[in-house]
Length: 214
Ligand code: ZN
Image (cartoon, rainbow, N blue to C red):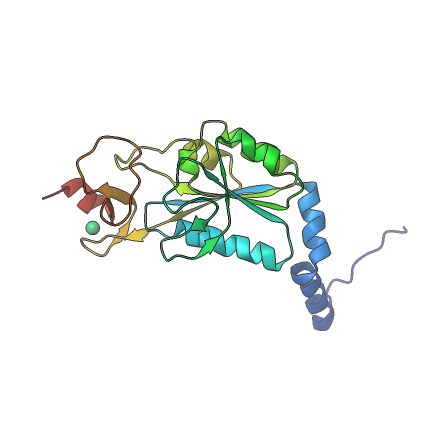
């Protein structure tokens, strides 16, 4: 009764053509992002490759000719302004911002927003991510899930809760070689935020983290 039925089996060449349309047609990609964006979280301990993964995803978006903007908290100025740097010194330019809500003002007319060192942002960050995603932006958030005490870090747990997808990366325990999820602090200092590199922290598995200096 006028209902157009699909053939029950599409010939191989036709289905291949359709698959290619879905994967490679940029229009399909764009139309999808106009309907709704998404929030992706890349988290883990120090030296787990979070920033490398963020850079990888952002570079792929750039190759797809999407407009990409990257933000990091102003508090984190380990490597100087305007650069998103990973430990293996891959870098892409990023904009340091005072607080999470400034991202909303600066991220107009973009397809993809990357947020690095997200644990240092304020508690507005989950709302900011939601506003962007609801506007159709793909938001990729990278940050430490736990501080050196093994406690959830800053706005990270809240962002993880509202995310479409969460990728938890693991480093390698420097003591035993097992997968590591803790950032063990090597220096005696109780401050929550202590920026530093290899001399300040080492990645450890649960057992070696609990053993401490023993
Ligand atoms: Zn270990």
